[in-house]
Structures are given as C-alpha cells and as structure tokens.
Length: 577
Ligand code: FES
Image (cartoon, rainbow, N blue to C red; front, side, top):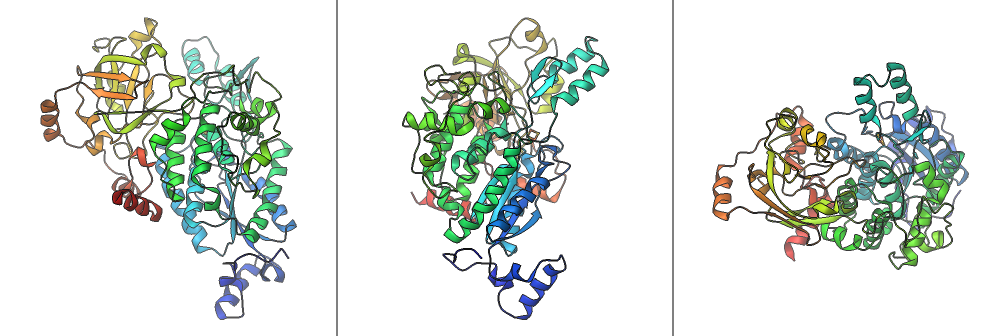
C-alpha cells in the first residue's frame, strides 16, 4: 500500500464498499485475473495509450506501457491500460489535425468515465501529444506524459537523413533516372529504420520537448531515442512517480500554470520548434484555464536565440541532440540567462531548477554556446494589421532577411486545388517580387487546417534560381518546412476574414520587424468586396466534420472547440474585461 492520499480516491466510487454496483465493477475486472487486493484502496492508474499500427511512430507504445505497469505495481498502484484515438500524421487524411480535438474529447470522456485516480499519457506522433494533454487538462487529475521518443537517425548510403528532408529529392531523382528503383526502396527503409517519431525538430519532437519544458514529463523525456534502453527506464520511473503524484494530489493544473507556459514558449525559440506548437500550446493552456495569447508568443520569444542545431534548419538530428545533453542542457542555458521561471512545478514535485541546474552540454556543435547561436532570433513573430486583425505567425529564423520588409503584388489562389492547377502555368503573371496568397485552407475552409502554407514556388521562378518568396495563408505548415511563410491568418478566409477579400494585383505590405501585415486597398473597395463575399466551403464528408466546422475556433485561440468548458469560461472572462 502507498501513503495515505491527500484526498479521497475517485476510484473508490466504483470499487469501494459492498454495494451491488461495486460488486459488478470488481467482478467484471476479475475476469482478467485481477487479484483481490487490486481493489483494496490502492490508486488506480490509467495508462492512456495511443498505440496503433496505423500510427507507426507509436507502434512500440504497448511494450513501453508494460514498463509503466512495472513501475506502477512497484509503487503500490493498480495499472489499467486503455486505448485512445491515435491521430496518425503519416497515415490519416485529410490531416491528423482534424482529429486532434476528437481525440482530446475521447481522452477527456474516457478519464471522466473510468475509475482512475491518475493517468500516464503515452504519446509520440505529432497530434497525439496535444490531444492527450488537452483531454487530461480538462479533467485536472494527476497526469504524467511518457513520449515514445524519436526514431534513430535516418541513414541512406553514407548520408544521414532526417524524416522527410530528402524525400522530394529522391522522388525527383527517380523520375529523372538518376536513382534506380532498388536504391529508392532502400532509401525508403533507411529513412525510417526504428520505432519512434520523426527525428528532426518537427512537430513531434517540438511537442515532446514542450511537455518536458512544461514540467509534465520526467527528465530527458524529449530526446531519448525510442529504442534506447533508457527510454524503458524512463517509462518505469514514470509508473512509479504517478502513484506518488496521486498521493500528493499533484494534479495537472498545478503544473500547467502561466509560468510553465512562458517557459515553454522560450524553450520553443531556443530549440527552433515548429509553428504548429503555437496552436497546440494555446489549446492546452486554455484547457488548463490559462489565457495564453499570440501576444505572449511574440513577446516572450523575442531575443531568445536558437541554440539547437537540428534539421530542418540545422544539421543534426534528435539522436545527436540526446547525446549532446538533450533538453535539460538547453533549459539550463535559458535559466542562466534569466529566461526561465526556475520555480515552476514539475511532475517531480520540486521546482524546475532542481532538476536542470547541473545539466551538462556534451557536444557544443549540436547544442551551441549562447553567443554562437544557429540564429539570433528564434522566436515566433506575430504579425497583424488589416489583413490579419486577429494575427498571423511567421518563423523569422526560417525566413529570408531580404524579405523582412517588402511590398509586393498579390497572386491569389482561392483554394489548394486552384494553386495546384495554376502554379506551374508558364503564363501565370508572377515574378520574384510577388506575394503568393492562398485562401480557404484555414480551420473551417479546409477542415483541419492543412499543412499547405509553405506553397512551392512557381517552376519558372525556381528554374530562374529564385529560392524564396513571401507566402501568406490561413493554413499551417509542416514542422519540417521553412521559407518566408506567413501562416494561421485569423480570421480565416472561409469565415469572411480580410484574407478572402484579396485579389490578384492588390498590393500587400509586410514589415516583420514592425509586426505589420497590411492590404493596401481602399477601404471603400474592401467594403464592396465584403458585401459580395460568399464563403467557399467544401462539402462535408461526415457528422464529425460538420461538428468540427460548426465549432472550431480560429487559430489565435488554438483551434479548439468553442464548447469545451474551459474555453467557454475564458471567453466569458475576456468579454467582461
Ligand atoms: Fe509521426 Fe512524424 S509522422 S511523428
């Protein structure tokens, strides 16, 4: 038996006493061979598992969950594993982001419905991390995250490759006859050669890092490779720890405080994290009752250099990052520059600084010195103006400095299909000073907000040697993409946002240092266009898609549903201020 819990265990409402319902609840569980003392008042620990063969990044989580169970038993708890929806980035269409909120609802309802006193969240692939943390945050019970860890580095021939970084090149080389089919298939196998999530600093690695930064996971959760024995030891330690967290009543909202989110925003800048993190962190914060805003992202990330030299912007991969010292080393450096709230609470129960104060850097090529960063400004820039009244985001470290202040002529595509049909048309009226604008790919316009914001450049400009242009959309972009790409424009075009009013030939002014995004068109003209506006909404394929479109909020609010309890509360608070 464990220490006496600080508050009564909720599992006793199911298993305590000798009522008819207690008999039923216990009896059915006993058909699995559960012993009598499993129901004697020890904490019941739910293991929410996103294991799925359709989510290859998480396919090893059943095995890892066994280690969690060892830890729970050792600490005197009763572990019970249950599956939750696994939104797979590589296998689902149209986009796993469409299912992030569905999975979050499922996790929330599962936790509410089951007799669990604490939960271990088994995650890995991009959306599985935010969906499980959002669900647990809504329930506010003790929770600890165990990430599956990154794949081993990709190795093809004598080249080290990151997830997705060379696929375009290989497909082009196969098409051009410079690569044989045998070489192509061998690249396919060497590119993803172990269980685990994508091993660049894409969205999965970013989110694994941010849950560690938030204090929701144990030391080194972000980067231990999926197949390293230390990942299994971490899982077992998490199983032990969650039992103590239940006894201490260390609930998730005691960890998910404003200082924890502020730490995470700075960590995202230091690691060169994905723009998708903006949406996920805001959604998680709102579920925890913290009104995190785009302004917070812009303000807190300013002046934070990116010191982690990982692909897609740098040279190394997650395996290298772990061997170089991992996230604790990065957080120590932030702390030494007074860019961290050192007192933030973690799952260990103590202040954050206690676990990272001594974290070493083993390789200063991978985790660079503060005064020798990969990029001086690692934060997320939030632009606004009459083209994005509720904001838009851009990653300055991925953008071309020559385009930081630019005035150009819009070339507008009304949908991704329109873009695909015309972008390589030799007659397309576009040059390198133009600004590519993509409409109707936001949360409602393309339910799920596809990762198409980093539109490829017109072939004729690529052939002329042009490598970057300004692109503006209400879409997202993959965590592995880069360029001068302005994303998440809110409100989106399908909602009638000003993005819908842009026409080819209009002038747009972008001023990244001044955070300005301006459509230089007379207000009278815009008013006429607004009157003529008709939302361009694609047909809906399912009841869930209809629910999504009816209730998803805009990107500045993290694209969560408007009916979640925390969201309704925060909206009311904002309105009363
Ligand atoms: Fe799963 Fe990249 S596809 S993490």
